[in-house]
Length: 114
Length: 112
Image (cartoon, rainbow over all chains, first blue to last red; front, side, top):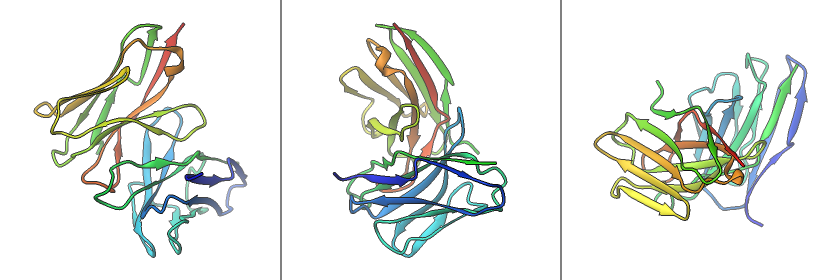
């Protein structure tokens, strides 16, 4: 099955701890994205990567970090500097530019920080 | 600055009725306008999308209407069903493979 895998589905952390969310895709997509979704709100872009070893900040990158060492993987670290990290985090990917406009989303990780 | 504004935030429709969700955008460079459907606890999934060279696109019970001069587009769900109850997001992007700018979402409830 081709798709995007995010793990774990639920994650609990204590305040002050860094936590890394996993995102893996086997769709051979070049671009990958991280979004944050808060209750009753839209999706806000955290980081995106168009190619391996390159990534760009989105609208709300403060307190987050990413890496893109492999085409298939785009992990997101929520650092202790993120003031309000409790949210639903969505990873997405899209095919090479010019081939398709669609973004495919993973099932999401719900992070709760107490 | 919110570049894509979506309304209403929530919508209740009777089974068999028509659900209408509206979006307005500011950036005239946008050239791709998708609608995503999200069920609770799941990731969004592409429902239907339109390019600005057409004014309407229909797929089954779902129709996008696009008004380029007004910079508005809308989703119509005909014969709405309880299974359509979900959150719907409009979005816009510039070029293929580029990041999407999302509207704030509309929570639709279809009553039996």
